[in-house]
Amino acid sequence: MRRYGRLDALVTLTQADLLSYEHAYRRRGGNGPQTLIQIPNAVTRLSGGPAALTTKNAVTVGRLAYVKGHDLLIRAWVHVHARHPDWSLRIVGAGPRAAKLQMAIDKRGLRNRVLLEGAARDVGAELDTASLFVLGSRREGMPMVILEAMSKGLPVISYDCPTGPAELITHGFDGLLVEPGKIHAMADAICTLIEN
View 1 (tube, rainbow, N blue to C red):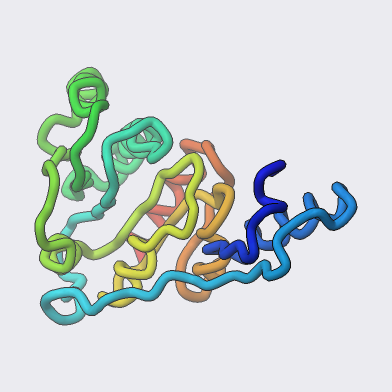
View 2: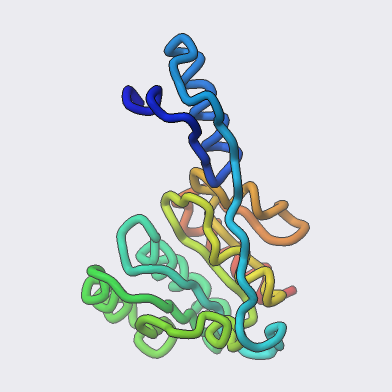
């Protein structure tokens, strides 16, 4: 923050970040950039058309890192699997936690129901094969993948983590927001969309 006062402008991705910086600069006596503005990311057109919503697949997309909360989704899927054993969770992405996540999947007996798909060249094609999108992140900036999933017509469930999901999802209207880190609440939200 000390060096930000030397900037002419600072651009944030979310309204929450913008308000946070504005508050921080006011606390410091206004020593900040002359221009502070939010410019959200735009979604580029993905391949394919709208998702058909006919498969029994949920999908999440993101690097396999702790912050992305894939471990939370695996734990939630135990409860989803008990109620809907014919549904699968596909985790699309690569990263340093792949081995740990696979161990968590195996430990919970979900080997054929939670699938680590690896990195994808065509996110549009991955979203086309799903009937819902779920995001388990512990923290986000501006989660482009939510916008991408919405552009495909997928219903979206996300933890209401700081910052971003609540700026993209209107709970109960175009998606569901779940209290961060709540495993059973996430499982219940997933089951709600499966059943409706």
